[in-house]
Image 1 (tube, rainbow, N blue to C red):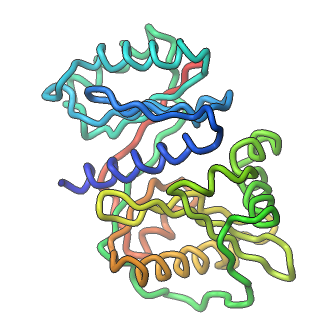
Image 2 (cartoon, rainbow, N blue to C red; image 1 turned 30 degrees about the vertical axis):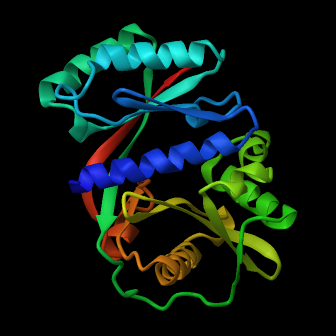
Length: 263
């Protein structure tokens, strides 16, 4: 697989992890698209991910949109469409924007897709005055949810609905959380897929940012998974705030992901 395909395949596994949020969650694979219903009423967790090139794949982009609208319409669920720009030709990308606009899909965010064969050594001293725990029990789930809410500025109730329950952490998503003086400070999520370690949910409490905790925890999580699996390659979708850090860690920008929402 090409680098952008590796990143996209890992993201497919990561999005599918949210089908574990509720017992009603489900994953459906259709030609050209992977569909995930998390069982919650939030568009970013009910996802359609493009999996084949346009054109050149088994179906047209119109068919992909039809499949997604039918799937989520039957469940009365708001949803989002995720795709790697490199799955489109330039002309089809322009046409896709028109197609999405006519169906009421609006652009919510864009993020670079990045890859590292292995992360580089840190270029600064990183904090080690924290305790690292796997996410699983009530305390760590609550801490993870709290950091998601504060770092990404989402309603606490929404974060709790997704991250505070037991079921999510019984699936392929592994969480790591750092505590300082018994207070939750930073998070990292890990998903395997595409023979790579996918890095997600890297966040730090606003009052503790710019101290190196996010990088330190991310490195610790990557090293633990590397020791368990032997995999050194890792992938992620970067926020604007984290982009320069990831470059310093050895990641390279390989593609771009776009996310459109339908409410």
